[in-house]
Length: 314
Image (cartoon, rainbow, N blue to C red; front, side):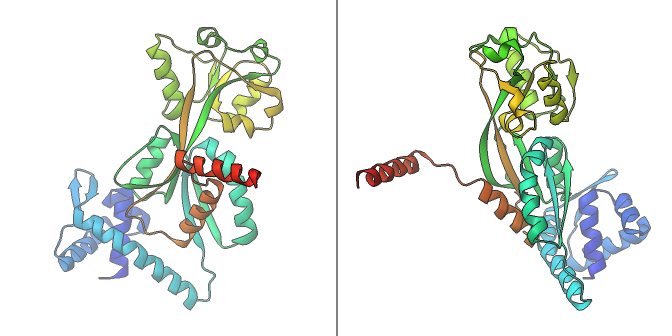
């Protein structure tokens, strides 16, 4: 097997197209096809199923990809050492916008001070698009907020519950009220994130179940802009509580107490089960887990309570 054949194989897997892979690698499509045919002949297996213009890995192809990724990483590190180049730790993150704003500043503070050879690329998109990118090796890790998500192809590093709340300006009449009827709340002007998935989709579904609907004044993906509009008392919004608590306008905002309405979503961090954990991935996972210690279950909570009680008595 030649390294160029293995690199070509991984590029085709990533973009799911011989023509696109050839263009990105600087080969003709026929030359790329010859490489893959040579690799398949040497291994005695078919690596790709051709489905029109798209291609998909066969089971032997998936096994080869799992084994080849760490080999090529080692080769790159050897080349860096031989050429006396600093080894750059490359990390491709997929995140939703609100988690990026809330959690990446702390991580980047550590990275910039302690890991000068890190190179991080962040893709901002909806959970469904990011998880599809994870399945096709276009990102290394995905950090999303959504209902609990499960797939045999993914490893879930952690899952943390987050409140999703209605928010208004401190100058709004709603700021001084408790137990506000939902029907009254949704009649106000609203600034919302775009219809896609996670909490916006869940809100629409919950309202539809009550035969209600909300028509926002504005839809935009930028939660910072939304909260700027809210603090100006131009309308209400519906956002994760951590977004409200971490925004520059937090002192001018109030969380509404809506009658008989609560919603939770879950922060979840994933990588693909067949993905070789690079050093950059390991560092990020360690930093993320330090920020998100495991939740205490009922048994651990009872043990902690007894320890505190015993300590007080002693």
